[in-house]
Length: 361
Ligand SMILES: [Zn+2]
Ligand SMILES: [Zn+2]
Image (tube, protein in one colour):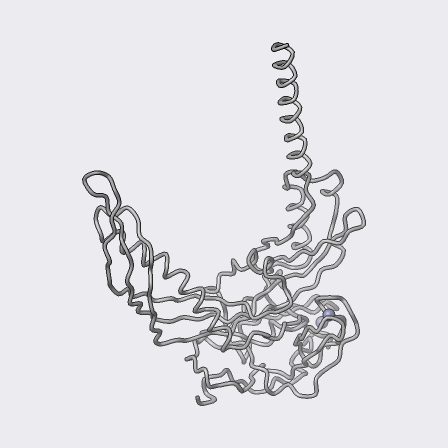
């Protein structure tokens, strides 16, 4: 595949991040969606960035391409955490702090970053840290079955991070056969073998390429609206880390196919049932799917990784940086209530048993 299929931009001069007002460093401000100087309060629009593209183009998928060209629009640093193994990327001019996953400062920069593909789309942070903290407090306040004192908790730490996603689109044609059940005159079920084909276009099949965020958290946070992705431009990364994709494009597509075929399974059965008037069930579905015009976008999406402490125990929290949705497994008193309910039932059963025994004596 030609290199043209990957995003290319010229290297951004490091001085472009300088505040035109006071010479301070501009960073991306989620609240305003603009560049912001924390020294003098100056805002600078991103829409007039010379690196901004009009659209987020989908790239034809070629499984043979393993070494994409880079196009971060600026010099980047790849940092590896010696404690947890996380690999994160940020601008070369940014000061390396601590690992966004485990907080360790034992991180080292890789010498070579040329093989790291740049995203072609980004969902910029839309809520700032202050609002994310507030939304977490609201979340705790709205919890049912919260133990005493939980609603007064606040986040100990909070780190913004862009997570990597492969987002695929493809046309599919599935050839299938299955057994469709009907009822005979005596209401007994009998099956008829049916064959057919099913066409479907998939526009938005996201696969998270992160290995560090827990799957359960990703499932809760994946409600990113990838249709609202904007073209990647380095300004959105100013002051933020991005996790390097650890699932390759190849394995991303393998995973996307599993998701697609799971969806197709339900749709083919429903479609055939709707077509076969009077059918009551179906089973033994077998199908093979051909894919064509497979394309993908590499998109980075915003999350806040955070934690809070309750009664000496630490709880991990992930907050969708676009919508404020919260993924968390907070302590709950629900199990205590259930246990009390079961004990109540047992007590009532024992009392009834004793009364019946007394009556019989
Ligand atoms: Zn300034
Ligand atoms: Zn770490």
